[in-house]
Length: 334
Image 1: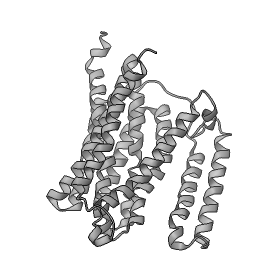
Image 2: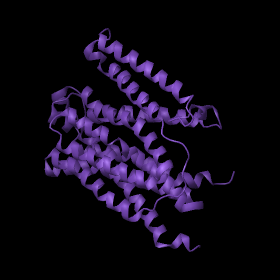
Image 3: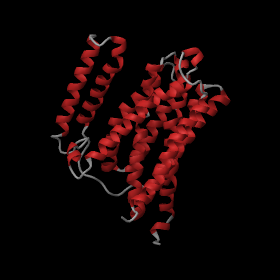
């Protein structure tokens, strides 16, 4: 065992990042079991509640790529601090939101949450060296544990406090406590990448997705032949087409499409896309159905938020086991 592997600095880096990922998982699951209560608080139906997750996912598409690139160029620890701060601000906005629209702004500000894991991966790879596979597995496992406890914890806390606003403050406090932890205990990476950030590509991608998906999402309300629906979908599609053209021509693209046809990476990316679409696409519908009272709504299971949290735990248990054992299975001979 080398002196570097037992140094206090090394222990500090690998010791705090799992807690940060635990907090990340906690926040990512915290709002799921609160969706029905959020709907009642802001008088929003099930279709509108879908935007609580949708606006977050749309924003992550752009912010994760940009923050990861900025981390490669300017330092992953620096971007980790920026991302954690933005997520904290978004969590505070949600807790104080006077209406549903402001709550959605807070959810969009939380999008850098999805960048905390890849930024932590980059730090762990440099600091852990040959044992980086095991370190990355521990980070993923920590996030899934946080997700499991976040789902059940939010429901139990809401049941005990009986106050949605107080329950919404918990993620803000937890993430705020992580900021000094990153500053004090995480050392900066030393390897830097060349090139800048594809801001044009990021803008085209973000606006294109927002317009196109906004048109599809509101079509049942506006009407499929309404000018707002048609223009939103068409303009969004044109912007996304322009984004692809830009990515194929710039020197340092936000998303390198050539990777899809090189080195056997394309199929795993497609599988990941389909899996994510299934998981995140079903989250709101599953949760709202579980929390809806059939005597009032005509559908649902009538679960309490605490009981619905068990559904989240069942999902994350499998993820936890896979993350913890995946690295060892890959290394098995034959």
